[in-house]
Amino acid sequence: MALCVLVSAGVFTFFYIKYSRMIDLRLSGHILQNTTQIFSAPAQISDGQAWGVEDLVTYLQRSGYRPEADDNALGEYTVEGSVVDIKPSKLSYFGGSNNLAVQFNGRTIRSIRPLSGGPDMGAAEIEPELITNLFDSSREKRRAVRYEDLPPVLVQAILSAEDKRFFEHPGFDFIRIFGAAWADIRHGQHVQGASTITMQVARTYFLSTDRT
Image 1 (cartoon, rainbow, N blue to C red):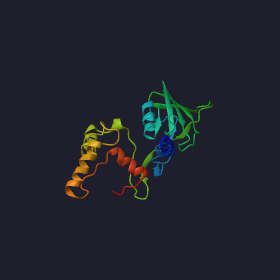
Image 2: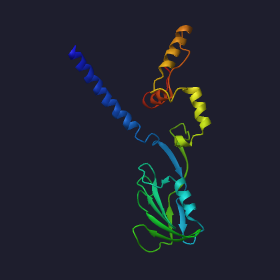
Image 3: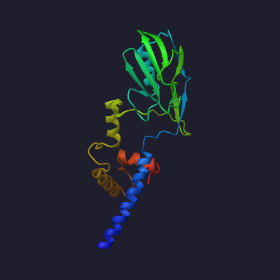
Image 4: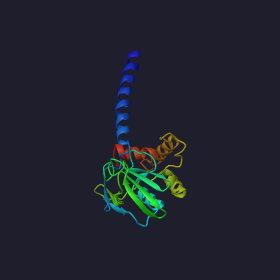
């Protein structure tokens, strides 16, 4: 008996570690890495240009920059008074170079200097803006959004149609599973599904979309 328990525990541990590593790798923030992205040409800024701090910050945010360090962002920007520091990441068009300090005079660019120091450059390029992206051969368009940005009505509609107890179960909805099993038994065929949103996502990323 003890031997069976040890063997079972060993097998469970082996597969737990194996699939945990696989899941961590697949969900490590690079799920949409195989998208084809289409960018504009790099934007040009120059001394005397009619741009304010807010205009530059809005453009950088739209281009994928964040106000704090983020390994998955195209870059980082910081605002100190009338100066905006631009720090492209290794994922950016500039590959981690082209660090700039842009100083403003009201709603006009006063100077553009290398962040490491140096004379006024007069003009410089900044990150190209993403026009669109295409996903795989199906040419679907996808854009990552935060949960907080989803309209509550949309969330409620999806949960109502797909998984009413999403926030109440750990990934498996046993009430739904038993209900679907009973419906299948009564009709003598597969008439009702029991997969939760969690199960659907796991199936899509790790298995296939075939209904079995």
